[in-house]
Image (cartoon, rainbow, N blue to C red; front, side, top):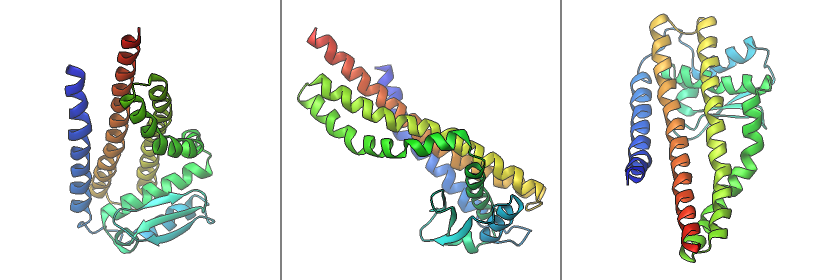
Length: 227
């Protein structure tokens, strides 16, 4: 009973809390004008050039907080607000995505592992619930176990994502400080934005782990029933 209380708290409360934190932090600091006067695109380009990554492009991408780094295209893509905006939040997000580009250039171990897990995790997330549901409703423990194994690949991807995101934020903060892109006050504000964003990854990993544990408990219960 206690496990299920914790389970429901994690899958319902923590993700909502994480989303509210990131929305609050981004909304607040997207209204704070960066004293450097640089747009997110300019911040990204400056950090890339300072690290010798002249081959990495910076592009605008549609959507809200759709910012990401594409390792295949070697491109940092920033949402419209962050690409053209001059806010502290936009500076933090742009620097974070460049952090991923730096990881890629330095062949960062966890990033390489995460990239290799993408096809497996995608297949697992798409197919796992098919086997899980059939296994549970048909009381076929072997199919349920197959679903659990497939889901475990997705959980592993979520867990490996954590050090990748934390390290990208660390690199971002180091770069904007070393290059004088933000003031002392803005440094703390940028950190708050990135910490809030990191919480969403922690929440996603926690939900994935507890969902996997719940299915493992169902599977072990089936095994005992079979015995």
